[in-house]
Image 1 (tube, one colour):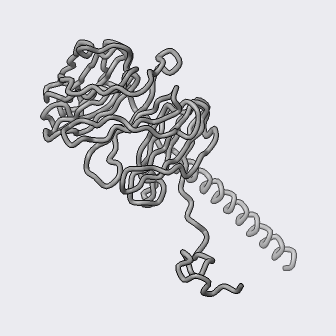
Image 2 (tube, helix red, strand yellow; image 1 turned 180 degrees about the vertical axis):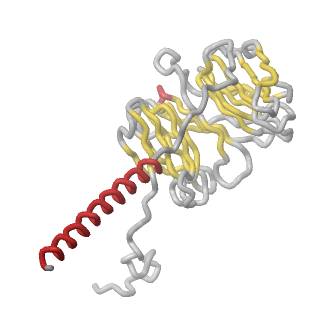
Amino acid sequence: MGARANLFMRGKLSSLRQARRKQTRQFIIEQLEDRRVLAVASPPDQPLNLNSISTLLASGHFDAGAAADLVSVAKNGQIDVALNNNSNAWQSTRTSAPISGFSGSVFGGATALLDGDPFDDLVLQTSTGIKVLRSDGAGAWNVSQTIDYAGVVDAASHPSVKPTLAFLGNDLLADFITPLPQANQVAIFRGNGAAGFNAPTYLNSGASNPIVVASGNVMAGPFVDLVIGHADGTLTFLKGSADGSFVNRLTLPNVAGSTRSIKIADLDADGVNEVVVEGSTGAAILTQVADTLASSPIINGDFSAGLTHWQV
């Protein structure tokens, strides 16, 4: 009986081991299956042929349709607009001749609502300044303002930059912020309340050759902050304030190689924005870390109580 009992127990242990191995293998497979995030079933079925290589490619509403349209701007100032037919296809493509009176090169730009109509307008950065283009609601544009800035951007050494349109400070006017690589500055064109901008003011970018500016709330405050990417990969964080001014709060060296683009968004739906940086050596996601200090060790906070709670 003892031998049979031993054999019986060994059989049960062997069955348990096999069952555990099967469960483990199944669990690992489930984990791998959970990691499959994206799958492309077919190649794009709505290719869009452009007349020249884009310096700026952006979406916006350029006609009365509800779906977003597409605008492409070439370095020579030529603009292609693809209007959406609201059924997953392009209704028409309209090509405009290079901007009237344009000279130099287009380095980048952004779209936004600048006036009272429902159509997105266009702000372009050129080698000598910016141009404001108002949409006519049918895929064409009218130049409404030209503003020069100090210095000239060299197209050979800096063929493109990425500016941003944002609502800085506590007003409701869109402002245009753009990098000036050769000056190691960013230029800020404040909204003037008349669908245009005032003459620029300048900020030091915090490093050499700024080429990307992104805007968003990333410094734990109610106002828009700026994140500036540089050619050597350095990121600088400028904290915004109510009057639209900024303070340089943080510098991170060589995050992902030479910066190509920066996006600010709440990726994990926790109510806090992350910063996504694409560079010449890869991409990085910067997340905000909560302060581990539960409370200030300084009892009287801002020292308004003088020497209260302190011993001399």
